[in-house]
Image (cartoon, rainbow, N blue to C red):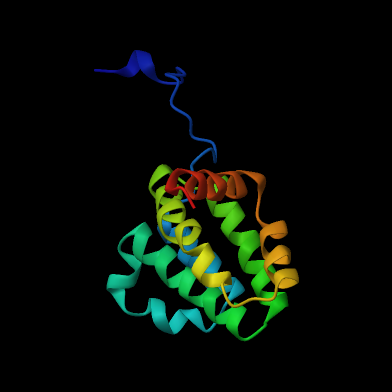
Length: 138
């Protein structure tokens, strides 16, 4: 019936232009923080982008508290990747969970450590953070 369409480019992309989703994010997080695998074994924590980013933010908080700078920097780099390559749901989760909690994550940090964390964040994440701070009137 649709034989005439065979080999015709209908504008449907089959290349890897697909955005990352929360399932991809789980795999990437476990590569950076292997111990997070345990937490992701609870299936409800992998069902939505908000749960995945919540778990990742909790892991980042622990890295900050433990002063694990090497893994922390890799984690921030990974968050940058999720924000730039992620689908809209993943970006929304990052903005509403990670970016929103940055002040509380870095509250007890020395200023130089806080500066290091913010310097590692991508300009788009930094801008989103500043937008949230200025919108709140702080």
